[in-house]
Length: 234
Image (cartoon, rainbow, N blue to C red; front, side):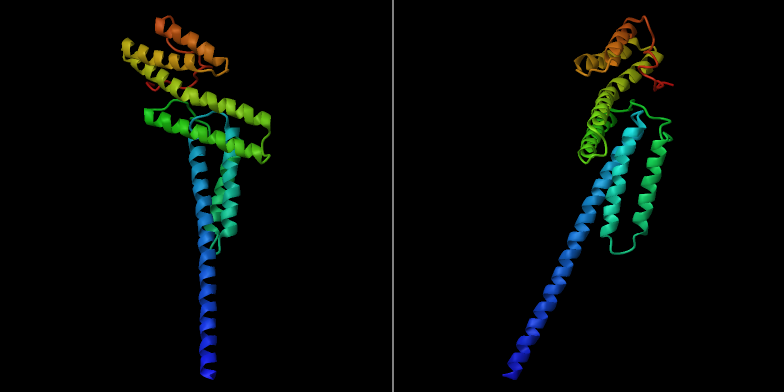
């Protein structure tokens, strides 16, 4: 009888130990999954920030979006049970990047012009992601509705201009090569996009008019305030 009791007790202890180990492993699995999910979010936001730095002139939009990585990295660090030095380094880097964006240090070569259809498409995807992030930032009170509207307006203009400016740049390139037929084709593509758009930015109407003049040959390029980027042919 005593032996049976001992065996039962040992079995219960073994079950308890196994259950404890399983709970610990499950808890660790959940922690790692949370960290992985947060890391994916950080990487996605960094991709958006990298794209916006190279595309739009308004550094404040990029700063607000980059700031989101700091909060996510802090959540990752709170979940970390091992060394946190690499996460702390990432947080410092994100904070420094936001400081640079706050002083516009990162904007020497921001341009709407892209070199290929793939780059245009990828940039437009990231611009749409930026709008989603800004809506989240507004929802949690970090920007107000007026700021969200202004930023969204600017990003939607950038979405249009990525295609338009890239076509115009190609037109400049072929004009420099004295291939008027190809150049006009690109100018007309850019003009068609502008005419099909419902964007309320007053620059749109001016660009349509000036592109007509470029196509007709009465002017060589658009006004610098409309398309400040250097032509790709330079």
